[in-house]
Length: 638
Ligand code: GCB
Image (cartoon, rainbow, N blue to C red; front, side, top):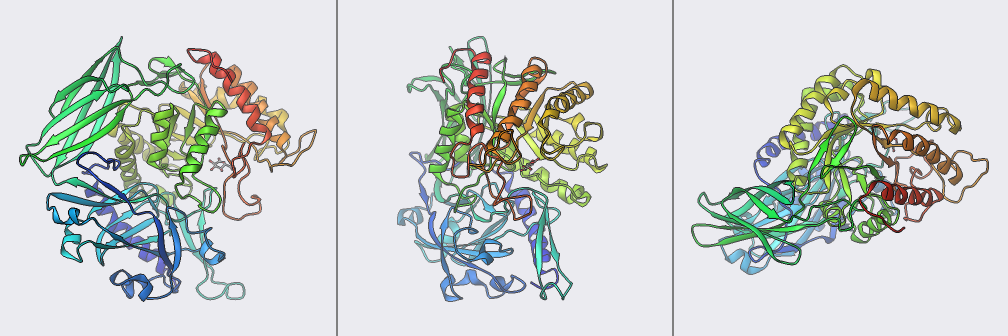
């Protein structure tokens, strides 16, 4: 790539795409499900792929690779979807590739979809990192900025105008990060010709995970009737034994659709119904949605069926799981259903061998089994929104979520400007639009460890937090901080203080005896200044599995355990006061970029990357089950 070709291309695309995202936000983003009026066809699987290795990464656009089958314009390789492309081949150039890559798949669209003009056909990508452009049969149908949220396009017209049932889907994806993307990054050209060849560049980032790229979540085709349910918003509360579900349904394609809403219990019994697109359902003898280990019958979900019947008699049906629960924050507590909730959980990553950040059901189910095994009642989606399927699992298992946007590594003052802020607000809109109806989501996190001591951070976070609250007033808002409390400019705006610290690791390495003092000081400083409840949102130590020493030394399993124990002693004191949670960093080892402080990735997992326990996992298991029995409303057996 010559001078700043990739950057310029990325920036041009960013601006164009932001406009289309703003418009798209007027529409909903309901998870595609089947119903009597809707069909879903998963077109994930084996796709073909080519990285554009031209110096400017622009050959694909110049030669219009989307116009004809990709195999006709050059060599292609097999590429699974969903998956990151980085670890699939034996080629380090593909692993570390920066720029445009091209994916293509031919699919058949059922003839009845095309013939029935009352059917709307939508192409949806669960997520692709970072910029994406989509074509169907050579016609551009949409583009999207941002690596962790879904995007979709109505392709009915294109399919009907082009070649009928055959559908060639082309997706170009670019992982170039700029100062204004989330997360931010920069491309650096190396100009010393005695050390680097002409055109040599690297991508610099300030976050500690590998910048996996590609189509990370399923690609779906789905149908709705032309007049269709576009979005549903529910908010829940209760009083004594009466649950209240307020709903708002938006219908597109008909201005006079008749909407009917029915709420059913788990045994199929209808417990409430209403006519109209807005209203409140009353549920007597309500079964509340409780977190795992807080109640003997956690994660109770009702089923809300929405029917919209248009003037022509066509009915669209969409069913949404609904958990009835409340969330409140006081100066010392986090309340779920008016009862104190203590977060004993984990921070995760979407990360695994071979597939990178690609969605994978076996991995998701294994991770939930491990979380439940260890007695974790919560996790944070560090450092970006996770797949919707994961949130659905959390709803069904009662695992509480702090839902984080990809605002990680915001360290450069140029990333606090207006363009960055506008994009950050848009990403929060996309995130809230997607995740607002999940009972498991109890708090929004707008960023992780930004340089919140820089002067623009005050204005930036004030805007960001208040905008997020205006999108959803039913949940608290936070961001995760690592900075010195006295210099933090964003903390006045958040509802809960979330602090990361690594005493005896990044500070005073080897000195676990200092943890008690330093952690107490940390908590007292933050609480003294803000009088808000505090979550220890990260703490931990690297442990290379199988490495042992006694007395403990850094990188051994014993050292990781000792760090944890020292933190726990303080948590046990402070949770009687204002500490409302502890989230270990990290659930599992994960891949990072290569550096002298990472031994094939970050090893702070209490499980290995292959999900086998280290000694720390057993320690946390004992602890979490004990805490559950102390703080839950019932007794649980380990
Ligand atoms: C942090 C970051 C996290 C890192 C972790 C570490 O503070 O939030 O992304 O991976 O520390 O292990 O350094």
